[in-house]
Image (tube, rainbow, N blue to C red):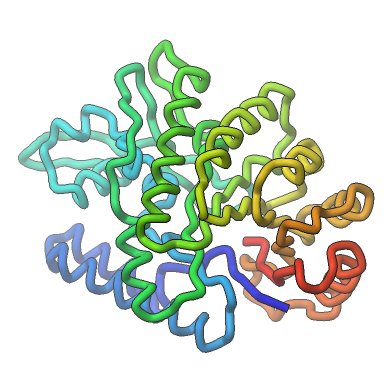
Length: 326
């Protein structure tokens, strides 16, 4: 049975990223030194997962500050007040995350909100009427190339368009409906670029699916992914959920052309019931979230094995990947 993790903590076992970032903000180290620290941490995380036999290792789960902000920058969603500072790409990123006060101007950081049921807070992207959504960044592709030198069992992860659009802030007259199709098309461009770089698996994280969904939410999700999945080419797409179950949309998820679906079987109180009642497609992998990635204590292996046993009776042994649920 294969194994996976959704993502790996980026701060470092001795909080190296935190300390390096603080030194960079104080101008005590250069941008290259900060990036060297980040690269070393990514390599350590990769090597540790590889050494422990993880079959699907995430790439692009690392961030210098925040993954929602990474997506905003990747797709050119940068408010003009930050562009007008004429800072480097890295410093523009940090200006959005922390604000900027210096010789080039004075701006506050973007807002922060609680990330679902965790103690983490994410940066809230701002989309205004003049925002031109387009794929401009290279971070996921660069980090895949870097990781592929040392391992081949890689999946490139990114926050999906549904969660991104639902959590973003709209500051003008336009709303989600004005941006959904262009963002979907840019996610197709993203998948195409992954394919050009030799990526086999793309992971789209959609934790917003565990919230109470309206009919409009479900229709939005379907519109987005009809476009994206039609343009996936040879890339296999994993839809990853966590922080709860997907009772409002389970049947649609299993009908769409995903190659794998990740479900949370711990905080997702209805997940096992949904699979039992509705079955699971034989042509998809089930990434079964049975290990708590937030927990500092040892995993309850007895509970995990019992869930896996029940899932094997429904989905079969070959279709299940033992996964974290965060």
